[in-house]
Length: 513
Image 1 (cartoon, helix red, strand yellow):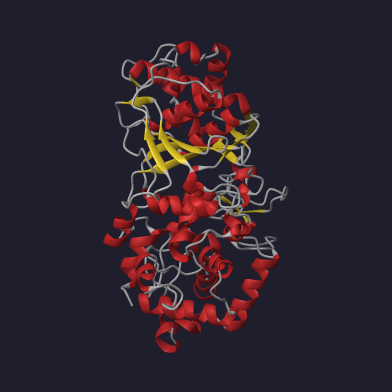
Image 2 (cartoon, helix red, strand yellow):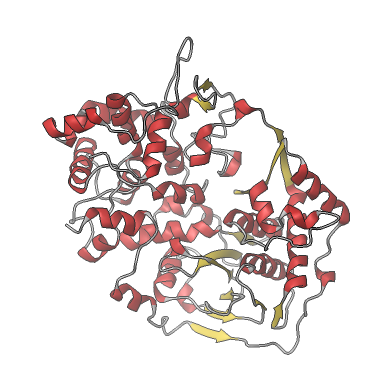
């Protein structure tokens, strides 16, 4: 078996390096029926003008008020896309709104994925036959494709009502060795009425679609479109000459597409790009849906690790949106607050609770080490405990962010992506042994749903037997991270740590044994 620990870094930390064969496939030409057209410059079209992007003064004032109001937490929700204060600030930092701006303003930052997704969703809102897929959608498809050569139905619910004449705006993050490691925004536009894909890339680097990407798209859209008969075009578009405004270009090109405005090839510079940032920021806050005064009790400490059961990064405002009444517990030492679900406690009456903030560092895990030495790693948890945990997760008796995302895969691909970057706390041998026990006890098969459950809930990714995938795919995606739920149960039972303390340890990537 390939060294497991190296594959954790290889896969879970988004540092997958494609094999020479995969690189070769990525560079192979498209199917012969597909035509690729590049339009270097149109004879007729719109040049950049601020009149295309009016900035309303009263909205600028509102944006400034939102920024300076320290006690207000706001968000913009468009369909399943959600942008918060930090996302708006990635479009336009607060310093740019000052009446007397500082002599030296900060550099304009890269836009967050949520800012781009939400703004593109906003420009498409209300337009018939216009749909939007978020940046993380392709990542979800790719993860399943590289292992099973298919896209599971659970990851295609957003396409259920897709019609042949529809248009899809699909922002992408590219530039890395895999779809998970990109650093540059581009826009794909799928035009069903013309049977063409238009690509917008302000750096003029990604002007076509690779063979493996087209295979994924052909599978995903097979019930509506026959992608191999489509044309790929790189139309006239505005370009950037910097490194941080690609997200602004994507938002702008999306709006040009929605409004059917043709443009000429042109390179935009400082003042023009700054104006566009003002425009997109002030446009986005027109759909502010929440102005919430938060007390300290409403801030769960687990949120900063993205492991809150009711994480507010998700669509619908939070995970488990139907839950409106929360139960809280306060740490007796640091006075921080946790949801009882996040703390892993039920009855808090008379409970003396500590979140683990005063535990000695580093944690030694002496009890767990002793059990492994005497009984092996499988002695850490009994078969019946695994079954009870599995059943309580499936029926909803025990709430879990990972279980919710598994049951509702379209809710927040971004959060699902963040939760996959955790490390196994055990050695290679112990990791394989414990995962083997989980599969045996739960009798999990090799179909895509069982594997999804195994990867996403029972562990983030895990070492699986070679007969599931061929050797090449096994080397590419050797699953190697234990179930957070199983691992947390082990840590809590043997070391007396609460769920939150176990989560923070697992986030560190340290090894137990």
